[in-house]
Image (tube, rainbow, N blue to C red; front, side, top):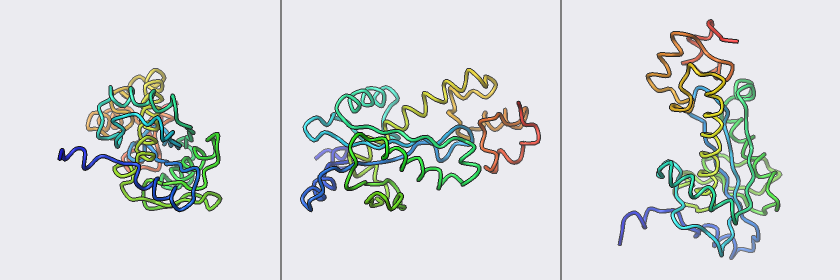
Amino acid sequence: MDKKILSAPSYRIENDYHLKGYQVIAGTDEAGRGPIAGPVVAAAVILDKKNIPDGINDSKKLSEKNRKKLFHEIKKYADVGIGIGDVEKIDNINILQSSLWAMKQAVSYLKKKPDMVLVDGNKAIDPYYNSIPIIKGDAISLSIAASSIIAKVIRDELMIKFSYLFKDYMLEINKGYPTPKHLSILKEIGPSPIHRLTFRPVMMFKRNLKS
């Protein structure tokens, strides 16, 4: 059997919870914990079991072209919610708490309130929701993988828009991640208003903050 098939996420976890009596199951994931600039974006997805697009996988394992294609296919049938933690929130409460906050927001914007939320990572979200953390969930659960695609595409689009405002930083290419070129630019001209000032690479050069 093809190893790619064996390693792809499935609907098994969701089915297990359906058999236990849970009716509405959502997956949630974020994009943007690693960058030094820009927001963290979370998505929550409730898939339609009868209309699950082929090819859903962890967004990091997909090409940009396939991510965008699946983004539109997922949104066509699934219930999707989005949460965004901006740079101010990240600097105020740290990236982990901002990620969890954004995932909670994403779930709250779903049209249906889920009775079970599958969360990528090792932390559950707010107790208001019945949630279970799943380490590397985007490689295991189709619902989480779908949310990783939605979050990644939306965040990339936001960073492209920011690149028009802060043209010096090549955000349309690096998406805020600390690439060598991005760090070189940061060292030369200092951070922009969307750089995360509490992140170590930015702290080193924040005395040159641009307005």
